[in-house]
Image 1 (spheres, rainbow, N blue to C red):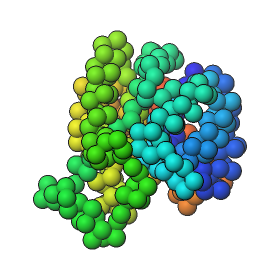
Image 2: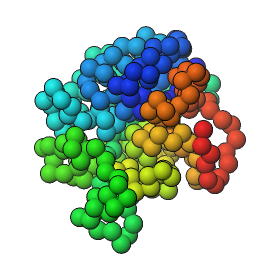
Image 3: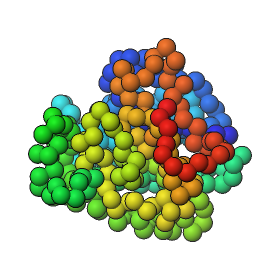
Image 4: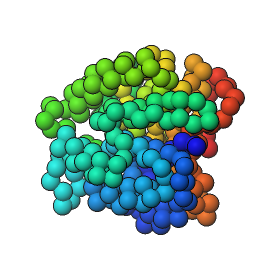
Length: 281
């Protein structure tokens, strides 16, 4: 039995949706969907319907695109997130609001911890104040669409929502890591050092929070899975493997290889740990 992961399917793009339809059957294996499967609740529903047919268990975390309030949708902020969770539960898919499932494979027993941790703009240079960070990014033509489509209500801001989720997740992880080693899953990277986007470096403020920088050590992580960056990459830090598992937009993957090629094996995974900078895939 294996644990696979992929993120950033963005099935609103026709080529990505067509590629996903050819996803192979893995009746004994688990799949992590690490966010941004689409931009509407209907797209999430269609992806889950396909994935639960092909995998024994499916684990989902939200990306920023799923949390958007798109044209024709009314739910915003927390209400939109709760709507997505309800859809996942209707398919029997594990979410950040459910008990962490235990994966028992050939490599041992691990608890999968799906997380919903947003960003708080703290991935920015120390000389750039929070109130100036969007202006700073726009100096190089960078602006995340979340500023238009991702609402935070009832929280005053996305930062407040992020901090609330950090507190909620910390309490659950403290308990879970007493019993098992964990696989941490979050759409956004948990460490600033892992944000490597050479084409748009000033996108970093929309990529996570410094509050999670030590979670891989603090919570006994075996592997940390994330997406969002659209730069597939493996890193080893403090003996922990970090996997960025994005598929990305149609121009960012080789469609002749198929989506199956981009499923990343999380467990058992590679056996040799190597400290230092990661490698792109």
